[in-house]
Structure formats: structure tokens, C-alpha cells
Amino acid sequence: VLSLLGVVPFLLHREPPPTAAARPAPVSARRFLAGLGFDPRRHPDLGWAWLTRFLINLSNALVLLYLLYFLRDRVGHPDPEQGVFVLTVVNAALLLATVVVSGVRSDRTARRKPYVLWSGVLMGAATLMLAGWQTWPAAIVAAALLGIGFGVFTSVDFALMTEVLPDAAARGKDLGVINVANSLPQVLAPAVAAPVVTHLGGYTSLFLVSGLLALAGALLVHRIRGVA
Image (tube, rainbow, N blue to C red):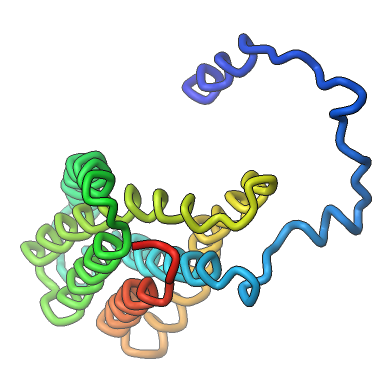
């Protein structure tokens, strides 16, 4: 229902059709496929921003993927499903509390990179904490810190992304490429997490990998030169 309601404004707002002179030239399949990506050598800021977002989203996906089993197998929570619900509420509440505030603050200071850096560091620290402190109180603290970190990151990193888009005429395509950094980690997370949990040290190793990915993504934001 919400998806349908979201389409209504676009259905009601009709723009006049373009004139013959303004119609774009036909696009061949080869030209279309060639335009789907971007060259990070020509646009390094966009490349580093994409990689930053990809790594932090992958880190977050790894934590969420095995949360139910972590509570059941390592924490020993009596009701793991209820535990996941509680952690989700804590995480979502703090995410919503920080996403707007951090965006406004970032706009007022005209700074992007410090917010992305420290939000990634906070997420990495929260995940690394779970590698060494695998208890129910630790899970609550980590959920809170991850909510704060991801709220700040989600808001400010999106603003940063819009400032590194290289071509005004291709912003729709570039935003689509950026969205791959959101969706691809959701696909890769199971392939990364399964062998780590099964063969490479279990949940401790999983949280170590997740924390290091978040820290790497946070530090790479310094490679972006065109944004403060």
C-alpha cells in the first residue's frame, strides 16, 4: 500500500512532452551497456565514495545476517526471536534519532568526511566489541552504537555521494551505480559469513571481519579530495 501511495504524486504531476528538437537520440544496446558503470580512474572521488559505502554496508549486513543464531548459540538467550526484536527496536530508535540531527549538523558545518569517518569508526568499534564480549548486555550496547553510527552514516554519506557525482547529465545513472553499493553487500554477506562462521573461527571471527570492514570503509573516506 505504501509503495502504491508513493507513486501517486508522480502520476498526478504531468510534464508536457518534449518537442521534436529536444528529443534525445536513440540509444543502442551497446551504448546503453557502456553507460551503466563509471571509470574510477577518471572519477576517483566517486570511486572512493562508492567503496566506502560498499564496505560499511557489507559490515552492517554481516552483523545482521547471523544475529538470531548468535543470540541462540553464543549468548544463550531464552527467546532469540524476541531478542532480535528488542535489538532491532533499539537500533532503529537510535538510527532515527540521529539520521536527521546529523544531516542538519553536517549541512550547517559544511563538512561531510568527518561524520562518515567517525560513524564508520563507531560501527567498527561496536562490532569488534562483540568479538570479545558476547553477552546480552553487550548485544544491546552494540545495537545502540550501530544504530547511532549507521544513522549518521546513512544521512551524511548520501549527501557526500551527491557532491561527487561527476556528470550532471548522468546523475540518474550514477545514483543507480551508487545504489549497487547498498544492494550488493546484501547478496555477498551470506557468501562471506557462512565460511567464516563454519570454518574460520565462528562468530568471533565474523565480528572481527565485520569490524575491520567498517574501519577500512571509514578510513578510505580520506581519499576523497573534492569534499570537505
